[in-house]
Image 1: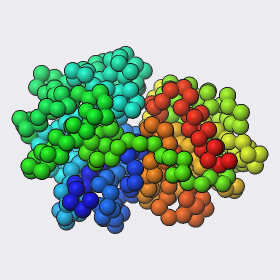
Image 2 (image 1 turned 60 degrees about the vertical axis):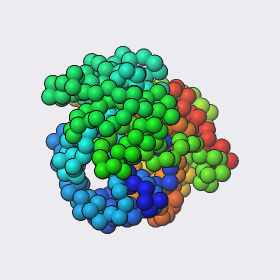
Image 3 (image 1 turned 90 degrees about the vertical axis):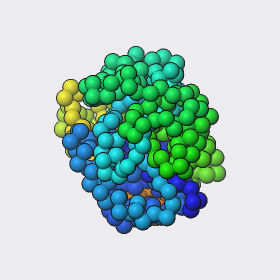
Image 4 (image 1 turned 135 degrees about the vertical axis):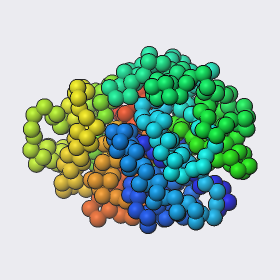
Length: 414
């Protein structure tokens, strides 16, 4: 793999490695950690910035600092490299701000390619219009997101809306998967159709061919393009590939999108699960929550620690991160061994890994179910060992997916 391109993925949410396997996910961006990640033989390196949970000025500052630390290390690489800004397949996030920062700090780059299709989750793009299960995405609840809402599923119009007209829809190029990228101009935006994994492979082949000719395009994409760029097929973990699980597990639910609510209700209907609410409205003693979780674990019942349901008006990203940290801190006080954790929601997942377990990186094993990644510490954690953690996006699956994920892990325990 030494001559294959190194694909550096700026991931705005820690669940974005959901179609690949066998690569490092960095939670810490020290020079030493970045050097080790770049030296890893995998074609993929994920930088878990969690920028979707930040305000725009924080995004600009933190990405600028990261790029400036990364740039001299890229200059030392003996293999070609490219950058992907991995974002949400339901169009929530800081596009095009992230690409503007990356282009300014790590360029030069050629065109900007917008590829949000994620066929594994029913997100496809046809004639430049982004769809969810065949329906225009702006008809869905995702388009009414308090921070990242939008009025159109037409991607050129979406870009015009996101930039308050700085990018005009009529100058954005619409391309089919097999169409050439050679005519795109430096800095020009193009949106690419994709309805299947094969379409993403075609796009990946064209991006890599351009890279071989010295034209390094900058990609804003969902997870599926990474399969086409890396040559990794999107396949699920075999039962024998799931780490042995010797103790009961725990489920954390911090995501507040409607699908997460429905999945939580379904999980709490399962025998063997019991809910513990982390109230957003009344003060709670962490020790009391810990005792409830501990009691359930001692009875071999899976505790489901969930934050109160419903989005709070004005509930800022900073408050959401603080909530996730409080929930992670409760988990870290548990005395009994944990067999696994399912973390529902990007901020919930990252906070548990980075601030709860205080990990600098994790190793991606693969997917337990489509879009649900299983990760482990590369070396045993001092308290929790090689604890498997499933990072579960808030917006993925159907009503039963969380329950099926839990059932698979419980089957591995027994």
